[in-house]
Image (cartoon, rainbow, N blue to C red; front, side, top):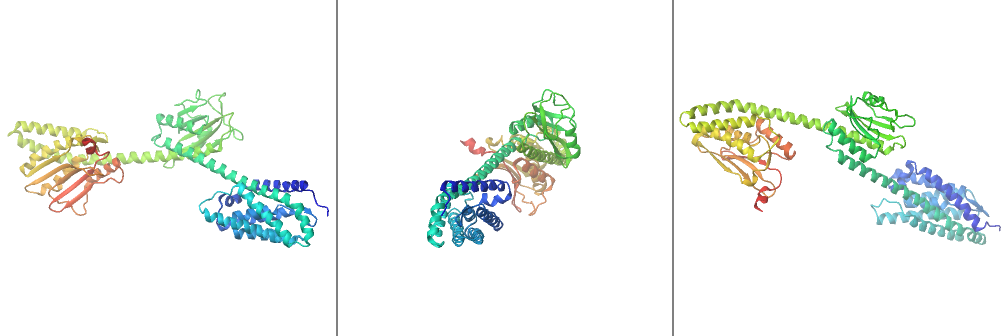
Length: 567
């Protein structure tokens, strides 16, 4: 028998293995590798695994080296990998397909090779089942060393089956002596290298995805809230953040007419406040689409200077309510390529900025609406309250001039405070000052039938509140509750201290609040302003016991002031 030397046979198998690895590399760029990389259990993915590694088995046989009526080949790589990735059923089917193909080619080892290929696939599939049972949540590919060992065992099993099933035995023994060493070396190494390729691809993909996600998240965190409106100051800050995070050569932000901010290369001639001159920018604004000049197929031409160092540009329109209101522009120098990741990031950044602009406009409109409603409440209060106050002063001025002067002072304080443009936030101390002035005038109207009780610890005086919060609640208690009592009307304003939440309480002893109240404009505005101040979970606490009491509570924001004061 003229058997091929071991060294030459190993070289032949290595050549086959190299061809497989080239094919595997090309396939790794296609969706066929997704179930392999993810160790997917889905039926469509298992079908892909079956087709892919069955093809490997058949090609391994075709590319094999004839050796005295038999074939030294890399078919085992397909069977073993098919079983490791697809499980027992897929592994057996891959082995069966490769084995039947080998059986059709004939030779004294055809039956033994067919059986051994089926057994190799089934063995690897059983190992897959054991591995997945022990690590059900692990979606990482097997290690190359693990695959090497499995393939080595499978090849050793194949040599044993050849000795048991191939006839005549002396010829089978001579064949095994010739091919066992090359196949026990080349095939396990080939399978291990295949797995190393998959592992590297997955790790590179995960690393890239992780870095990109972290970069995008960090960038999003930095730019949130920076651009509440498209103006020069906020645009300059945004442009600096974008250039730092993306690493591009320059960044510009424009409205539809002029450059609002520019930072980076070329800032000597790209100046903020100058009109837009770039045709690329005009096209992005007019056509409402992203424009990209990559510097190769489409060149970026600076209209400001012939010596501009910038060679490529990405222009992304900024939209608000469907209308283009400006652009974000990322530039790279002529010496650098514009990275795809920066293009993707740039488009994502534009979407975040658009959301901020829309959100900012909505908040501004809500604030304007709330302010308008507040002015309406004040307008409703003033004529009625002013008429009553003047009548009270007229009645008191002859009897007690000193008291009348105090009433005029309180009326002036109330009108000055409520009419003056106030900040959105005030303190409990200021709210109490306004409410005391209001109650001083009202108490003279009610006379002895109204008593007022205060219990506000000094430690709560600095508690923040939306302005014009307490007085509407007090007025509501007088107008809709205590005004119905002919005597013994009692109004209490105090702090209720709880472990989780402290509240400012306005309580009357009329108990006339309806069971399902239409709160009225005043209380609704207080509630809305409270939610804008503390969040949507905040609400007025209304508790009514008919004929006995009505309590309306305002939650106080911040830490527990009482505990801080006591400690």
